[in-house]
Length: 305
Image 1: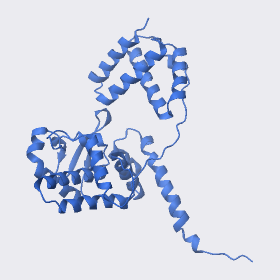
Image 2: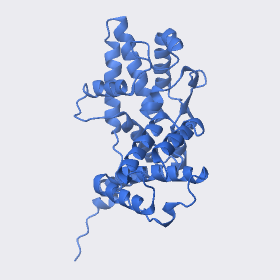
Image 3: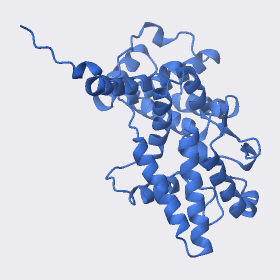
Image 4: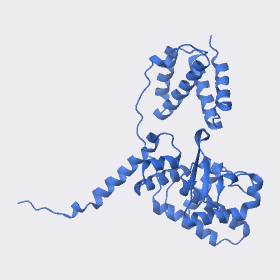
């Protein structure tokens, strides 16, 4: 009888040591496979997989179902490669289903502008050296989020060696340890990053990470969320903004400026153009608004006789 618990551990070790998958992916795999093992009572058949899929559809949203099925498929592929099983039970299982399209939430450019103005104004009003350091760091974080469209985890895990302020480049390590190079050419963003580095240089070199907290450790994702909330609260807008919304706005606003979607795909680090195409739906919504409100045909009045 197949011992799914044992094979799961072997599979996770393979993911970590051979495939170099990140800790978050491995943690998700572990959770999904533990759930699968418990639900199927350590059985691995077409029937048990069908029942598991039915349960997922009843209890979870389509996106989560898709991810959990993908985990079991990846595990199955491993079992086949390692000759643990001879037949792939998924060969005769139909699991395709359509996910509802959920448009990414973006930040209007005027609100991004207000957030940055509040941050720069606070920096100019600081009275202590400590306050200046904190506001300078906050500005650098906000600027790089919007300048690169990077995920908050990618920003927080930036190493000093990955930031080249002389050549205006940032090397970002994305999902699956894939790396991409982002150029930063805006003078305000470069100034913000240089000002931050000058104030924090000794601590950055000691820590190794580019963005650090007051304890001289890596800046956490939660700290970035708090930075965004802090300056959003200073604006006149009642809106909840997450770090990922900066990423969505980066992509959507570039698309609005007629940047080719394949360039945006590369900048975001998407392995598939399909993932990037979600932003075309947002652009189409903007197009509809423009054509309904600003089309010159609205100024023509025809009085038919």
